[in-house]
Image (tube, rainbow, N blue to C red; front, side, top):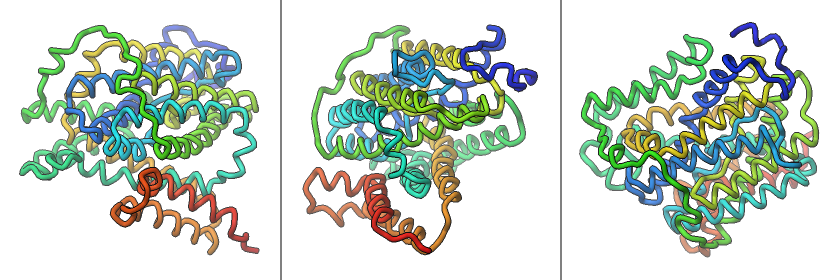
Length: 439
């Protein structure tokens, strides 16, 4: 398949022969699959849903189904909606901190309603995204992504040790050698495959690592297939499965992250055209990508799916293969939709022991933080910018780690203040606007 990287398919409307297009589409799914379902598992846990239960299985299904639908909005498009480029959509890690906090305190009904409204606002950004980019230079976007990764890393460690819920952390088995053996096996296999293999195996390193960890956990007697046996093969989807509950604070928090997500999608769109076709993205492609982002998020929120965004690892696949065909990614979208409609698949994922997932997210969340640091590497580290980084991270992560410090704030403001991402973004944007540039 190496001969494909010659630029022969640098036109998004061209399609390789089906015998090549199908495995390429599946490769796109393998590269993002683990990252796509993980946010739903974490938010479900924060909401108190039983691990491996029917409700968690449903949320996992929605993650797969609406990642596929959102990807179709990007690759096929409807009118001005969609970049019509090989952009793979998936559930965004950027929203995990905010949504986990909302779900834990106010419930999934409030969290998903905020996703719906935030998605509509995100959609509207498509009309003005080009004029907002100046508010989010690499200093701001890098800071926010770094804050997301740093917020999530402790969650990864808790999962690897046995779980993030209070009863799991208080159990005697928390932090046991068995749990860490399983978690570290995932990390080791993922790293070995990522850096010592090529092609599909390298792209799907984390997914394969999870499978190996799952098999080791099975040998240790940590896996129960009872929920898989009970799950049906085909199911429908339910609108507003947790009701419609409006909270201004939740909507503001999700919208702030949506703006950052929109800017990230602009970057991914530009990177896709640069990697696959050697050109800059057009204004229509950037606007269309943002419209698809927002619409995909809003529709997913109606049925229990979390916000979607473009997946950067799939941009890497476009660059690696040289295949710019949007129809290849459309095949991947169809695979995701089929997986989302089969509860058995969701039940198998939900049966994964938490230490297995923990091993995977140690790598994934660490990579989120590293992506933020990579973005900040483009920034000149003068005194002004270092002060902005220091104060923004101190405010965002500090209040998140010590939420009782703002326990007397009104509910709406308290949710924002302790979300890690929102205060980091707000403080960074404010300081970047008011502090004079160094000469």
